[in-house]
Length: 178
Image 1 (cartoon, rainbow, N blue to C red):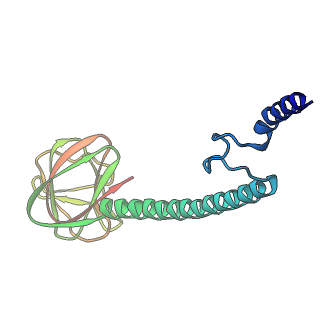
Image 2: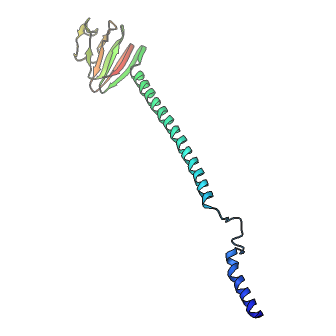
Image 3: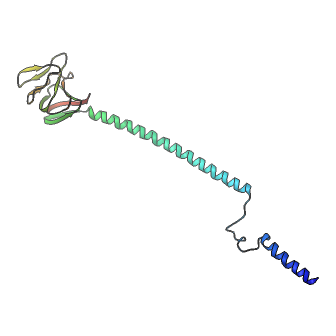
């Protein structure tokens, strides 16, 4: 009976040992057991932090998009200002127009067409004074090359081009796309 008891005791220890967790692998602190409620609590915390972080990132993205839009509008405005900039020159300056552009000159300004084709922009008070041939150039008339033109008044007179032209200009002028 004593032998039988010892065998039962040994078998019992062998069967109970893994169940009670006496092995060195399960006793380490690297692999603790947790409850489902603790896991749910931690997952809710992480989810909350993640949602808050995404919300903050969305606000930052909206602010950046707003700043980009404002900067794009400012750039567009500055481009328009540059295109409509009035330039003053006391010496002959080479000015190139391309595409659909026009040059509006102020009173006393002079312009000479050097290359390309250009046409007159006049006002109700008269045309462009061609001092080389002594004539008044009317609206939409072709500008002759190498003729000195003088603008008598600041009333919107100038020249326009359809393709490309090179001018020599003295005085105050403004280049405008049309």
